[in-house]
Image 1: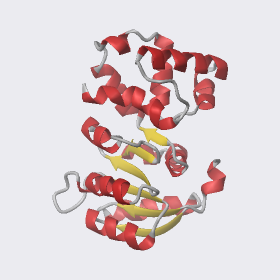
Image 2: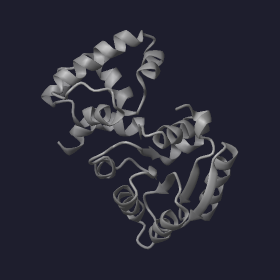
Image 3: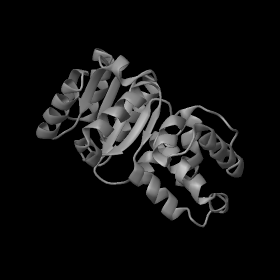
Image 4: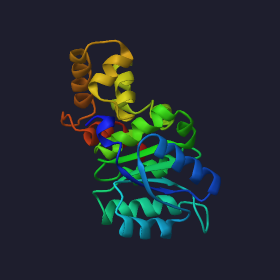
Length: 222
């Protein structure tokens, strides 16, 4: 589905900073989304989803009362109770544990981005459209840290440099066409690399986004 086809998506924003909450809401409205609610804590977020029935939720990881992981906990509840609602979680810093929990199980319609990405409006909006359409969005910085920590893992070490490039872009949620454009290669070449990646990582070859992301996320637990 193209971004233009989803510009009327209903969004609930969850951010405890009033300034950031209002700024994010305004950004989304200007991008064509309908912001149906804007709340400041995890409990309010859950009530909003139950009452307003948004298509997608944008939530900060850290919210009151402890400012630890209330937003993430609320996102996990939403994933369980309302699986049709897409979730895009924002974090100030890279927390691989949060990505692990968020992407556990079905990874369709879920994203994890650093707050800095919001400043790149085009990238942020594209990620939101992607998760709303049932895809995934994983911050490139998270992917980089996974690779850095997993260099000695035998399956990952078996990948060629180009396969590693393709895998990193897959983990961000890029389509085959998007990967091809980024690496300036043909889609056929991308498909060949993906087939090789799945084989070396002992994952059944499949075109769906959630299986593609698992090719990287499996290393989060190592």
